[in-house]
Length: 184
Image (cartoon, rainbow, N blue to C red; front, top):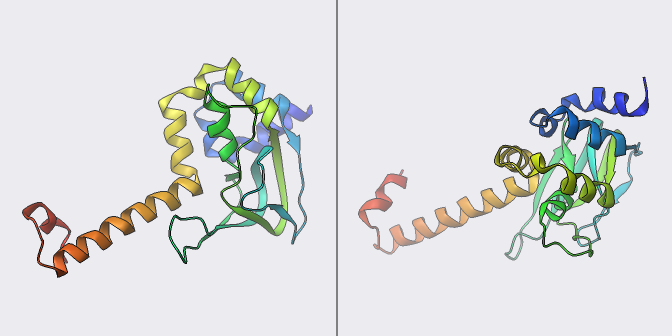
């Protein structure tokens, strides 16, 4: 079994790859590089350039951000088997207008327990995205957003902000008929 087949077998646990056809998946797996990470290592810090995307096969990572658009914001989660991180790179690679300047990380990622992962470099991800249009499908984008911790944090912030506005309007007596559906 060659390295590409090994990667394909191990990456079956990553939901993002469930939606891909065999040709696209093979093209990605041919370009993946095994990248074990040791406990305590810092993979990337918030604000650093993202030069590769990681797909986790085993182990746990702590990922957190303080950039939620408001003072005192902090969002943290543990990711592990079947997850991916540094997803800013996929958004960058799928954008036909993206520049050669790599995106900045929106999260700090640290290793909690020894990690077995596969990395896809920015150059290889951009190549696969340009050659395989299937990566641009709505179904892949939906799956990506569903499993993306960055998108989940954004959605949570959006819902919390809407709830705070609703509560403030309700307290000041500015409740409109359509607002009542959110009342306790």
